[in-house]
Image (cartoon, rainbow over all chains, first blue to last red):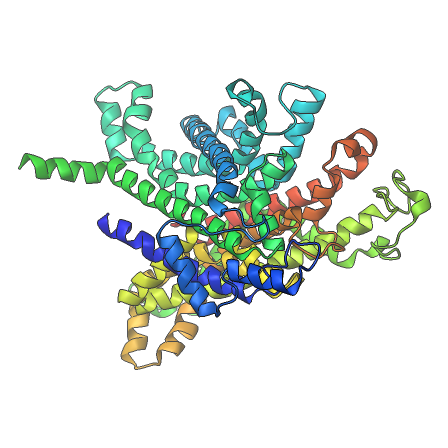
Length: 315
Length: 302
């Protein structure tokens, strides 16, 4: 566990180096990108100095690395030198909120659907559980998002067509559709994973023992089998978080949510190297931390590890 | 077979007795696959989609990019069975041509992923020790990375081109492959025939390529099939964000993104379904076929 925490800065440093090389290799001038007119020579020199582009790349690499170590995300060239942290902060909060919401929906519903499908294997509930799966794996999220929009915001105007909610009262109308669209592919995968793992768990000896001692069927599933069957889902959460992030770029566009997707695509097109670097690093830091957390949860949830610990404590 | 039986049975004359034929791995797998009706139907559907997209025979007379502004938004006719878009282009021809691109990108990207993933898993599993630990740690880290950012960066560095696109998508989709192959290699490494090959002093490269790879063909085939739909989806995401294929390529992703608008729904509903249906049927069929192959080829795996 301690090794995990120590690995985090190392991983981020590797990612920083990799992405630094990529943005440096990209054609196009970072200072001129996103500007309509070429500024006069004097101004250009000052701009290059301001954004560290007057120094050799190796030196720039070191300077920026130093800034990241102190938590400084730098200044954006395409947004007139605004500090990146201030610039993307609100957008990041919106994307993160939407992503977390979608991930929770996917985990809760996916686990539920998968459990039901496993318990009622080969019955109609099992077949019905395929419907979200089919939608989730067979259509890109921008299509499901548009379908949801058309049905639930235009034909039956229950939810908002798009935009970020002003205040909590609008949260349900504005966030439901994007969160569902974003969670669907992950929900599909989790429900399949959960179904397979639950079916397997229900055949294990300890479940049979629980049944034999007379535990109610509901109790067997929830108290005994669920914890064991949930483990594969838990180890999928890391990749799921990465998938939510990718999906959110797309879903945000459909629902006109001012999130990170806009910033990233625009930063790439404008050759705003510092903005690209910072966005990738923030996301990487978040995802790597998230992965480390799920790994720790794995240890907490795995019954075998728990049993061993209890044995060790009693001795 | 006959030599094994001579010890227990009295020697017989004439042809050897007709017992259950010894079946190889592939024959058994094919039988299991043929019994899986969903997988068989998926395979046939895929074959049909392929043939239609790549021959495009009845509609090849009219190029997908041919514009007829006088016929814009025309409904279905004999010449254009799916109608025409806002530039009067033959919609069916566009769908077929788009399928050709989407499928090509998907398969090429999957091949790239298969090559990287297989090599990575082979080396990590076979060499083992610290090399294995470091290589798999890299996979773990990449797994949790926002891969779409990397694809975007790669297309930024190397320009917007279809070759760059499939290379970039392939370069980020090999992780599952590497994990699966490594697991298989670890199992194979403990088997007597590999031990024998090593005892004979064969060079490592020969052991890997001649003795290992043929035994990995099953999982490679399965995960290649499952990587193709992923790659097609990723291409459609990139098209949607406006950083995928160059704009004049009507991939299924690009087409379904263009038509997903409210006014299209109100006025030109006939344009909405075709690209979405084509995309989803292909993705579903590939997923089902991949699952079927996995059940048939890899009975103990999940």
